[in-house]
Amino acid sequence: AQKVTQAQTEISVVEKEDVTLDCVYETRDTTYYLFWYKQPPSGELVFLIRRNSFDEQNEISGRYSWNFQKSTSSFNFTITASQVVDSAVYFCALFSSGGSYIPTFGRGTSLIVHP
Amino acid sequence: DGGITQSPKYLFRKEGQNVTLSCEQNLNHDAMYWYRQDPGQGLRLIYYSQIVNDFQKGDIAEGYSVSREKKESFPLTVTSAQKNPTAFYLCASSNDRVVPYGYTFGSGTRLTVV
Image (tube, rainbow over all chains, first blue to last red; front, side):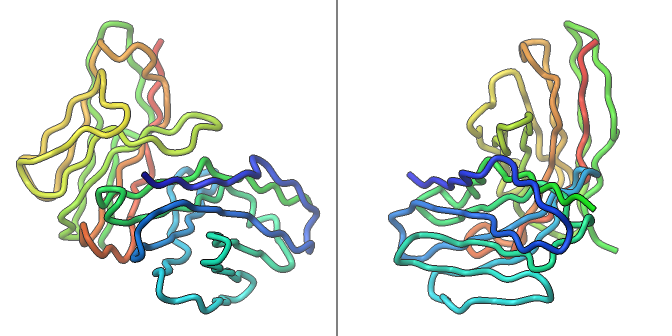
């Protein structure tokens, strides 16, 4: 069985603050993929990043960065200098053969950035 | 541009009626999925199809039906047996069932029972 936990239901910050969204996963597989998606108020989920289990390098893309740590089964997402446009629900997802090749999504974290 | 088209964006259903939600993709993806989203519940899998003419039940398939007669299309029917159908429905596809680059989502259909 596999599981994704996003313990933070809602986070509220003021613009320009840094914010980290947590994602903890469980799987018995050695090969797996982790994803982050953004869901703005319009509803469509937007792909942000894919990481496979053999690549623990942290990644930075503009104001976004991701910290993947297999030792703690975590794949956390940090937004630096948050902006109002970052307000959305963010989902972490896990994909592996142990999940029958179907992605398992966390419950999502709602991020509200106030001006 | 390639993508997934879901229609309609908003749908109202009377109690006891069946309704069908459309999902069409032009990405040449093999796998397609239907998810239901309720506030605070995340995404729950209803049905998925990894090849044409084949589909599997997800975690909450009761009260729903699907078909996959064409690679591009994966319509979802919400039947009268679904007791609480009011929700946001998302369709998704992926290029590879074993090593997906990612999942492409449609913009969703918001279904309301009146």
